[in-house]
Amino acid sequence: MTPNLYSHQSANVAKTWFLMGLFLVVIIAVGYFFSVYYENPTILYVAVIFSFFMNFLSYWYSDKISLALTKAKPATREQFFDLYTVTENLSIAAGLPMPKLYVIGDSAPNAFATGRNKEHAAVVVTTGLLERLDRSELEGVIAHELSHIGNKDTLVMTVVVVLVGFIAILSDIFLRSHMSGGSSGRDDNKGNVLMIVGIALAILSPIVATLIKLAISRRREFLADASGALLTRYPEGLASALQKISTYDRPMRAASNATAHLFISNPFGRGAKSISKLFATHPPVEERIKALIG
Image (cartoon, rainbow, N blue to C red):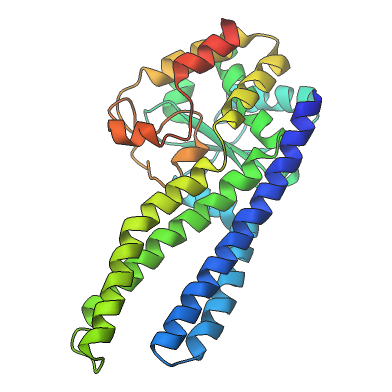
């Protein structure tokens, strides 16, 4: 569509490999620290193997993990005829393979796309979205999600789900290892060191997770909005859909920090705390609507 689109696609591929490489280095470094601390080189070997395994998992299976975390169910043509035909028609217009379709049983209107490439992509919508949007608005949302697939946003977005989630798990493991190790043979100095490391990880992990998600860049939403509007030739449809979605004030039942960046709109609803808005991965809806229709 434009030269910027292709440079964006290349940047997403590079960003994915960078995040996976950074994750590899961090896990190995942590494994080295604990192998020295416990004087057990096996811990380092386990960390190396596990970091490679997590990178493999995040690349090949992060889409399936995202679908499981959001409780998405396959959508058939017979059950959701409008959703299927709209997606089919827009996929043809965009020159993309027809993605798999899933539906989340939730009254909150929302949607996201996932998958490592256009051949292994899925578009997910909530039942609330299908109930509240008319056909032109639904076309706008689906075009937006298909643009994420075409722009290769879904590659980095789905990989982040696994890597960010594991950072939180890692900090929890360190804290638990200190708590359960209080009666072990370690001396007090070693116990204090482990406590400090665990507390530091517990404090820093949500910050690191947020920074990784922000590395995806809010610009991807503006680009997907613009690409989707070009695909439908009707930006008012997406603008109206965004307005309806943003005015729903209750959070999704399956909302989580690990998957929040995937959705077209904040899954925590308008009631989200102001501090979370500071680190939001989505630009304000008002700015997106203004960019679409002025």
